[in-house]
Length: 348
Ligand SMILES: *Cc1c(COP(=O)(O)O)cnc(C)c1O
Image 1: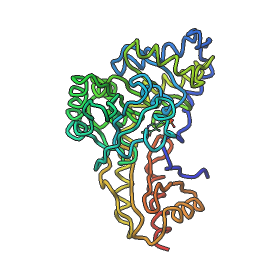
Image 2 (image 1 turned 30 degrees about the vertical axis):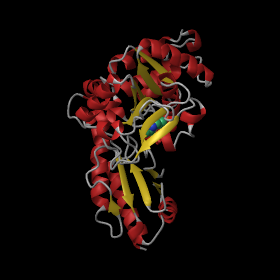
Image 3 (image 1 turned 60 degrees about the vertical axis):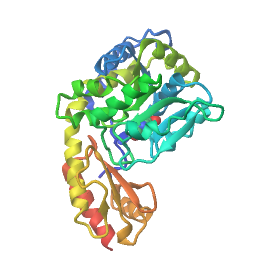
């Protein structure tokens, strides 16, 4: 039996429909912009998030890297919350590629507010670097899949724009955020992105595509972004094979993300019944459950290893903090089974 894999929603495999579409995809050379399937995906993605243009990128990290490069100049600061993917999981690309410093702001749940940001915009003068852009992560990964309240996000964008500062959204799980609104998911995603300058979202996570993310924004910015993608080695050729899966990921898969959210709630509720485990958000907003196993007297590595030996994969990200992510390839039965295994492992 394959393991029950709750390490990440990146582990999802393409659906049979995606594989068929990949098999049949019409392709061309995308560096010449002659891949019709890529062109279709980029247009459709841009339209869905309400931006002028889209760019297919091999990874979300490359999308964020390119966006930050486009919105800043060397020697500026980028404001991010202190647990951002941009800060901790992208190999300091903001420094390496854009020559900018991240100004991290500690938050309770990964959600910035204009009030917090305003204090970190340094006054122009002889000493301080100016703020090039603000980066928001929606949903927030390490804070447990939390979602920006729309009015908080709108205020950040409006206030930033008044000061000539751009806003980039790391929307790796944008459609998970959109799902929580209770509105039709595509329209909700568009509303979330309405005021941000650029947005990146992943096709390769909960949406199930094998590879790829989208960057979207104003046409002129995306033209520059395309050149940076080439510089980073991301100019692909018959990438329509991937875009064919991406189109299905984009159109169909957002409609089922609520199932993953229900499974995450079920998993969190089950965790609360296990002695020694503390759950950060008893009702997770989306598909990520963060929990602390300190009370079991074991380390997250010990728990993770013991689970693995019994066919359940869950990773720790600190000596006592662990993260479980629900997705298309785990059912509610799988979640129940993972809970039973975890209860055994925690108690022995
Ligand atoms: C997964 C993720 C990314 C991008 O990851 P890649 O593995 O480079 O595609 C960016 N931001 C967040 C919040 C993520 O969870």
